[in-house]
Image 1 (cartoon, one colour):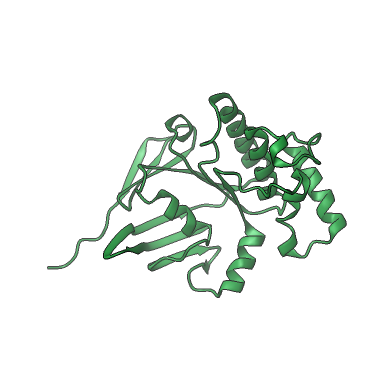
Image 2 (cartoon, rainbow, N blue to C red):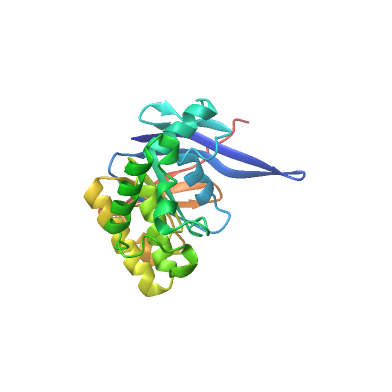
Length: 239
């Protein structure tokens, strides 16, 4: 389970201070599916980076299963990410000189998995996303949808608890987008993943059980099954 308490993030841009997150309180239960939506610059990707342990808050805490991701050392944080969190990016982030199978294997190297097992698990992960016939293809030989399937297989091969996706359909046409979303939702159900996704696409956002809308660093949560909404505003300063 994730528990975010009073999370803020400030960046310095020249002489300007940017308030990316302003006191975010958020709980994400095990097995939950949450979509984060909002305008460009509103803080949604910053929030996902906090959840993924890719950045640390300026203040507040981000806890995963009781471990404060902002308080542990870099080595422990790297290990936790390697073991528990799979991340999918809009731009696929595949290594162009490696085959699909080799790209997927890279996720297992930090875990010390032996070469034979890496190859077997990578092949199985690619079969699970419909790419069993593309193991030896490099990214340039694959379509955008196929490249994203390789990225999904890479995120899942280490059997994570959490799957994070940052605009995973942003570079895809509408038909391929729907195929990828159906795949992701199927994998969420099959593996009981905690699934958090950032998207600009309202048609995708409407599919999720829970929606977090973030604007100017403040968050509003909505349970789309019941219609209940909760706004978490920045605490007012005392005067």
